[in-house]
Image (cartoon, rainbow, N blue to C red; front, side, top):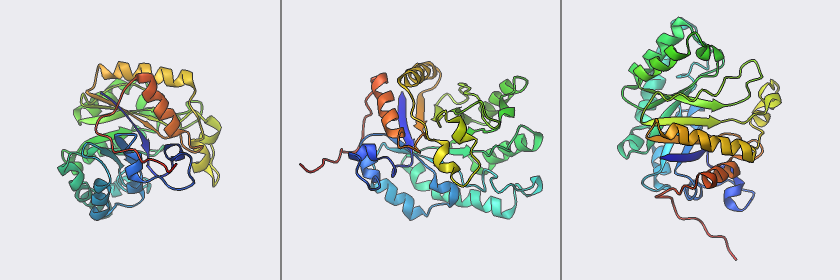
Amino acid sequence: MITIGLTTWTDHPALIQQEERKVELTEYAGYFPVVEVDTSFYGIPRITTVENWQKAVPEKFQFILKANQLMTLHDAADVDDYLSDEHRLAFTEFRKMVRPLVKRQQLKTILFQFPPYFNCVTENIRYLRDVRVLMGDLPIAVEFRNASWYDPAVRDETMLYLKKLKMTHVSVDEPRTVQNGVPLVATVTNPQLAIVRLHGQNAKGWAEKGPNWRKTRTLYKYSEAELQAFAQLAHKLETQADEVCFIFNNNSGKDAAGNALRLKEILGINFEGLGPLQLGLF
């Protein structure tokens, strides 16, 4: 099975005839069966918020939630503070927050997108194990942003370790010509789920360090040739995992939805159990 989704649901005008307003979750759910939620990275949502999300989507709709920034060590904590009371509390609150999704089988996975300085060293290898312990049997996906995890000397061991921890390795498409870029490594570590996240190939924007870096980093529209190549990748991964999920994050120019819908068309797939499409006024 191949599924496709976008990061967040609000900022995709292609889904609402280019209207200048935020897209509602109910409208988004008429097109895609999964969405990645990034607000949980900045602050752990209330359970009531999660329950409101559930009311807006069909029964089979699923969510990918980004782990909170404390859980992915974006606060640049010292190694001795990795499991401080503050960090442990974030894990506890996050586990509570996802319970409604788990109960209704609407949690696809929790995305641990680690920062570029989270490199392949002993303390970070150990931290991955600690993450599994702290999260129990919840589904976890890991996205590395430091190329050291993919060094030929350790790459196989990295993948075997993720497999042992029952974590999904996230394959990423991003610029590889910049210092902090990583290669697209299409290795499946979880036979239930493979994830490919598409950030675009805007090398100049990816290297941007100024105040507008968030607006330029994912400013990229995938070409027809690139989407055709992703379709081939989807078929390849489909032989190794029950589900292959593509998430488009190339949205600085509002291109993610159009690219995602085109990939769906290339693959010739139809998603079951979507919400009703909203009809515009004549």
